[in-house]
Structure formats: C-alpha cells, structure tokens
Length: 271
Image 1: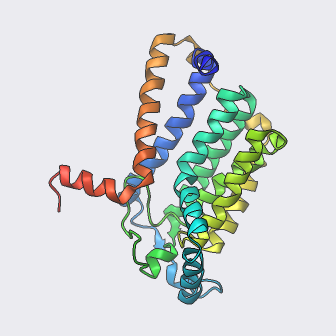
Image 2: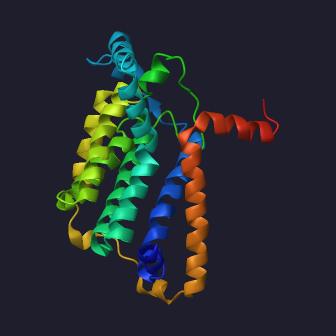
C-alpha cells in the first residue's frame, strides 16, 4: 500500500495512468461510433470462408473438445474475459506502478495507440465476423455492445495486444511478475481460437501487427508535453480517481457484457 500511495503521488505516474485509461476509452468510443461511420465497411466474410481452417466442422469440433475438459475450458474462459482490458491493466500496474519503468511504459502506450490506429483503419475498410457469429453457436451473443463490435475480428486486437505485451515485457522474463504476464498473454491466442471468438488468421495478423508496431523507432515514442506537469496535483489526482473508477466499471461490465446490456436496456425501458 505504501508503494501504491507513493506512486499515485507522482505526477509522472498519474499522467501516464490517465493516458492509458483514456486511450482505452477512446477505443470504446470508436466502437460506438463505428455503428455510424463504419457503415461503408465491406463485409468480406463469405470470401474469407473459402480459406482452409474456417469450416463449421472444425470450429465446432475444437470447441466441443475444449468443453469436454471442464478445467481447461474454464481456464480459457477466464483468460479470454481477462484478456483485453485485464491484460492492459496488469501490464500498466506492473510496469508503471510496481517497477516504475516510465520509459517502457511510454513504449507500451505508443504501441497500443499505433495498433488502435492501424486496426481501426482496417475495420473502416472491410470486416469479417467471428466464428461464433458466422455459425450461430448457442450461448454466444451475436450483437455488438458498448464494449465489443462483432466486426472487429481481423486483425484481432485481443491477440495484437497479447503479443505487444509479451514483446514489451520480455526483458523482465526472469522476474516472477514478468513470467506471470508472459504466461497469461501466451494463453490468450489459444483461448480466442478454441472458444470460437477468433479465426486462426485473426491471431496471425494480430501477431504481425504487434511486431510491426513494436519496431517503431524509440525517437517516435509518445512523450507527455511538459505543460501537463504544471497541472495542479489535486486536480490531476481527482481526474485519475474518476478515470480509474470508470475503468473498473468497464472491466466489470466486460466480464459479462450480455447480462449488463440486458440490465441497461431494461433500465432504459427498451425491449
């Protein structure tokens, strides 16, 4: 607790913490706006299904095999729902809060932002639907929510971020925290494919995107403008607390988006 209190008293940590949270909220906002600005995106799912390893038989057989092993199935479910927002949070806590590695934290944020930009540009041009949507697998929602878009599949940002996390944390692979983060992020690709959330091609392109953004020269790494450090500390701290609370709420909703969307619709009086 003393370490956490010390870190949250450092403006350099608070500014970076807010940048990570706001970048994630920005992606959520893009997902919401995509319902309007993405209407010209071309659906190439039918053409995509002509590729090998995309058959209904394969998708169902893999899913049924995993379901037949309950411990493994539940592990992959936990990893998947932790996956995106959770993996970001774990990386930020470890690098920025625990290790106080500001330079690597800046590299991580720059890679995230560039991945968001490239993937978003691709989704604006064309999109592919996930296996569970294409084959209408029972128990899966085919509707887009405030947190996810069913069109955001190829490349898989879920897997892009997992690979970015591994590449970024690799230098700490001999530390216990580094080993845990590498292990969790290594499981994410298997969880996304075995649970029919992504095609194998989504994983491959996600990895390629991660390698691409991780090759960005260090001189291009995003740096916070010096003027930001002149902000009143109490105001900065209050903004951080609000953003962290919102991030926690978003993460809780992400654990069970279908249930929360039903609750929101009922509160709004929608059928």
